[in-house]
Image (cartoon, rainbow, N blue to C red):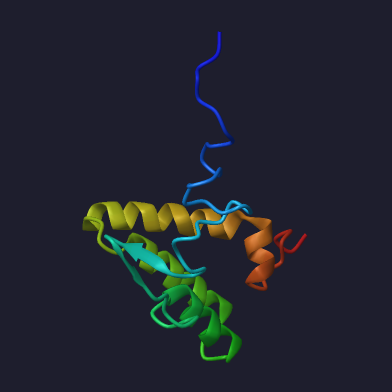
Length: 113
């Protein structure tokens, strides 16, 4: 017995919003769809705090330690103060004990051994 549904339909078949390469033909790469309209994506780095942080780091306006501290502070923003304190301490402990992150920050990954 067959279903009676013919053709090559499906999520990427004819009439589908998904094009042959798995790309949604209704949107432009890098654009964000809001409701029924399309909003252009911001220019690279514009309004992107991580991109701005990376640019400041690359330009020498921040040390790696300052950049990491800002990432930690930004990640806990908006939490209640007691949760901020606890999470910040946990993240700082993790960063201090992680050999890869320590190497990125210029610390001796073996702790001077």
